[in-house]
Figure 1: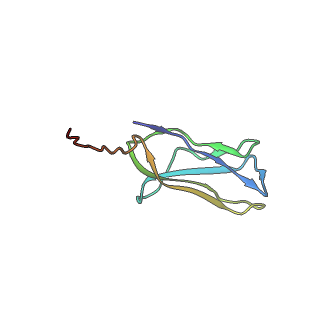
Figure 2: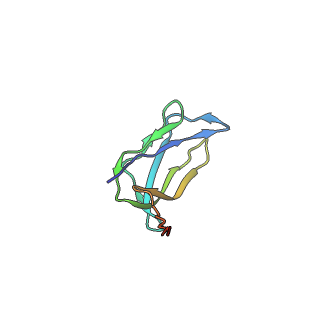
Figure 3: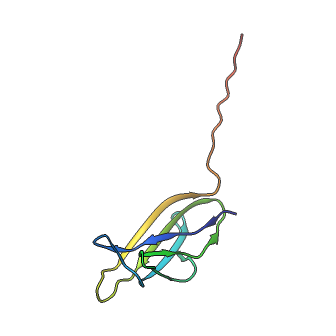
Length: 98
């Protein structure tokens, strides 16, 4: 099974926000979101990395949320219909008569 980890970057006016809590979620495309591990705290660059998770191949939606605080508004970022695992293939067959 493929292993997935998410990275979120939190900024305000292009300035990284440190020590803020980001919660990560995943779901099979169109399904119900499940929290991915524990919430993480942003570093000095505003970056938080999720826990790693092994997923079966298929299409998934991913989401990162910041709940907001006394200074900053809440925000959410989402990636939808992302293929985890093997890529689809196609084959073309031709018959050549000489």
